[in-house]
Image (cartoon, rainbow, N blue to C red; front, side, top):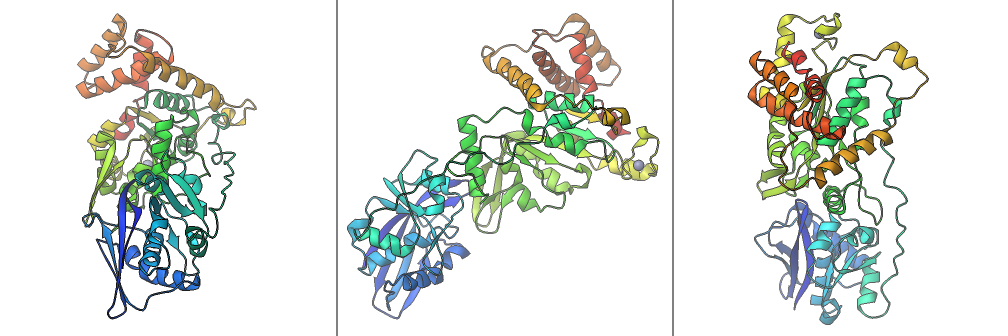
Length: 490
Ligand SMILES: [Zn+2]
C-alpha cells in the first residue's frame, strides 16, 4: 500500500517542501530510501524502526520503499524521520490515510520514540504548504515565529499516533516567552581613554564603515570591538527574521518564541576552517560565520594570522552581501552582509615601530605588512593605530561615556540618512575642505580610491554632527580615521 506525507527539508538557510512517499509491498523484508537522501536521512531507517517498535506499533516484515520527492533536491538532516514513520504507519494500515491530510510533519526520532529538535525549524515551517504542521515540542516556539501553518507539538511518536487515531487531542503547548535575548553586550563605559578608538567605533556604527584597528597587545582592540554591537540599533523585523532563520539553520540555541533582534557579533579564530567561515559541509549546507554575522559584526582578531585563502573568501560577501557555497550537493546562496571589524599587531613582535620598542627585523616587518593584500586593506574605510592607554586614564575614577549615549547619536545619524529624500546628493564639501582634499591628492597621500573613501567617512562624520555640509574639520577627522594605513605600509 502507498502513503504520501508532507514535510520539508533544509537547503542552506531556506526550506523546501518535500513529499515523503512510502510503499509497502510483498517481497523480501527490506527498507530502501531513494530521492537524493544524505547520510543522516539514510540512517533514518534504523531510528524509525527502533522508534516504531518501542512505541508499541507494528513494523512490517515486508518490503518498504521510501521516495523523497522532488527527486532532484538533496534531502538533508534527520527531520524526515517523523514523516517517514508516519507514512509507514499509514502504508501498513496502522493509521487511517485521512488522518494525515493537510498535515506536514518534521522531527527527528530517538530510538525510544521521543521527538527531538531539528535545526532550521523556522525555514521548514515557512516552506510548509499545508495548513497544519507537527513538530517536536521543543521546536513549537521556533516554528510559530513565521506566519504560516497551525503548529502542533508532540513529545513522542506514540502520543502522535493516539492523536491521529482520534483517541487524544493535540497537547496544549504553553510557550514561556523568553524574558531576555542573552546577555547584553559589554558597555563602552568600561573603556578608559582611547578617544580615537571610541570615535572610530561610533563612525563605523553610524556609517557602516569597515574598521581595522592596529595596535600592540594591551591596546584594547578586542575590548573595543566587543562593544560595537552595543552601539548598533536593534534589528528591524525583517532583519531579525533573517538573522533568526540563519541561526536556526546553523543549529544555534535560540530564545523561546522571540526573534533575535540584536546585531550578532561573531569572532571566528584565525585557525577556523574555511568551511566554518563561509559555510557548507560535504552534504548538508550549513551557514558559516560570515552568514551568522549578517546584520551584525564579523570580528577578525589577529587579521595577519588568517590564511590567505580565508581572507580571499571574504571578497564575495564584502562585494555582494551574499556567499555562494558550491559542493557536490549543489550550490546554495546564504546572506552574508556584515560590518567587518579587524584587529592586528603592527608587527610580528607586537610593539610596532612607532612604540620604539620593536624587536623585529626589517625583513620580517615588511613581510608581515605584505600579508595584508592591498585589495583587502582597501576594504577598510577606517584604519586606526591605537597605543596602550595612558596610565592616568586607566587610574581615573571617571568611567568612559556609556554605550547608550553613543548609540543614541548613532541612531540619530542613521535616521538622518534614512529620512533624507531619495536620490539626495551627498553633502557638499565646504571650500576649505575641498582645498584640503586637493592638497592631499597632489601630494600623493590620497589616491582616487582613497579620496572616495575619505569622502564617505567625512559624510558620516558630518551626519553625526548633524550638519548639512562637509567642513574642513570633518575631512581632517576622516583623514585621521584612516591614518593607521601608514603603520601597515611602514
Ligand atoms: Zn616588532
